[in-house]
Length: 271
Image (cartoon, helix red, strand yellow):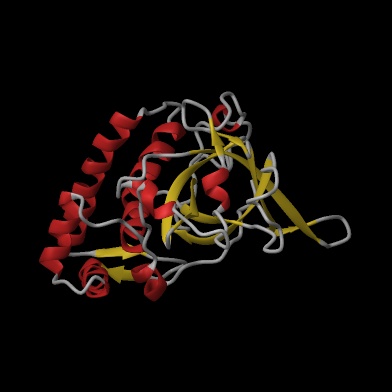
């Protein structure tokens, strides 16, 4: 299996890379000149899986691979997307959903909410402990430094930041993703929609296929331990989208200056 190359978000960006939940309906009251974000026009099935677009593709150059003429090989990955409730926990719920799906399981909204609160507590415990966390490549950061940086970005003390994290008042972002990639020992990649800016999606039909781009990864050192085992059953697409070691999260513009996190589910098992 080739490793997937995408950009890395370093510590300063990590500290400020914050996801926001979906705002209420009133936030989307707009004038004639305001364009509705594409995400607000997506269509979803009752199970919250996007049906239009139904496929999200990411194109990138595969790392350290070339064709017979020594030209870089473009790798195309296909995903479906499942939305989660936008209640301030979208990032935590997206991680919970991606993790449970990687085990061949699902997760209803009630379960995701409960797991998200448990995740918050675990992350808070790690932040409060003494030690280090992996960032990218061979770089590590002390948990104390990451916590203080995250607290500073919120203009609060470290103890207050931990309390906000635990009680659900803090919308998770880069620091929490850094921590979670270490807890899960899995890489977490972040994607954004790749739209043609000149295309007016408010007046056009939403496409079936949408292109996305990887904008950063956390925990890239945590490689799937079975990736190099020949013909391993978990890598044979025995169940579409399941058993993916790599966690993929899509961040979209939800309107009103808000961001929202959704879960990308691989249509085949990408390590």
